[in-house]
Length: 124
Image 1 (cartoon, rainbow, N blue to C red):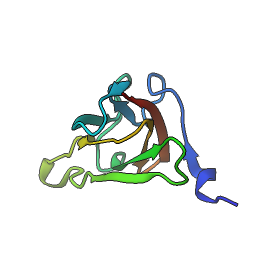
Image 2: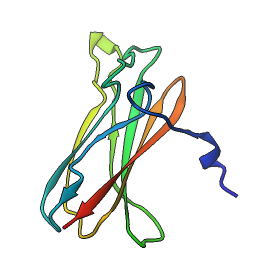
Image 3: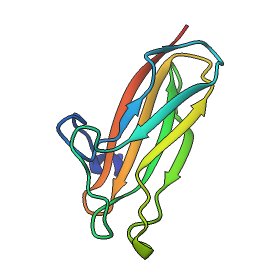
């Protein structure tokens, strides 16, 4: 029985400011370095204050037919108003993927918890 799955929230990022947005091409060439961008609040701005902020993203890749996803990166956003500095929750990953599959992103809001999104990628 999965416990964590009960706490992962999802939605359409165009109507929910907590859902991570995955900016990736729908198709890429096998083993060619490709840029994947993660962001929050592309359609509806998410607060970025000490009281309410995105703490981190994680990016995974689940290859077609694979049993488990592989973690591609973890991105921590540490400045939330200290000395009037703020880290904007945006991350860039450059990856080489050998096969088609699904990119999975998880974000963590200090007030509203865990949020998930995914995008299919076709390797040609």
